[in-house]
Length: 194
Image (cartoon, rainbow, N blue to C red; front, side, top):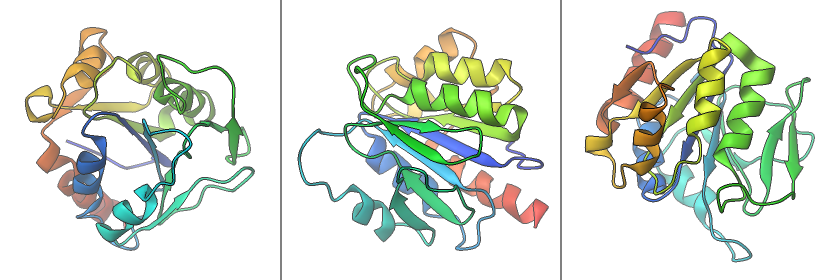
């Protein structure tokens, strides 16, 4: 069961099958959903992207690519820009980083999850969705060690099970949730704290 009491940030990572999965997670959420959401999806580099508009079509939240030095606000879903690692600073603003790829990816889910662990600690909630490599697993584990609530999509409901299974294998998850339940549980949890 998801509990948003005291949670200041939700961070979600995914790769192969991730666009479909993230739209399903966001679809049930109300426009006034109180916790900001940061989304890191593996993306194609150096090609025009319709990711923001595709996700926006499926949610009432404001969807935007994270900008350098932007302050994180509720009722928004922020997407890591293509070809940049998305960092979160101590003042809860974004920083974009063009350093080396991590696990063949930039943006790296692990890098963002590690920033969230260090900045938000037990005031964060992490979710790892479908994907074809292990990116995100070690970052989710660090979040868990810092007291965050950590979930993975049930691999049985994942288009590609490698990513959530990697988190399960290293003990980074508190619970597995079927994809069609994640958004509904977030919505119910938000109603309890409003």
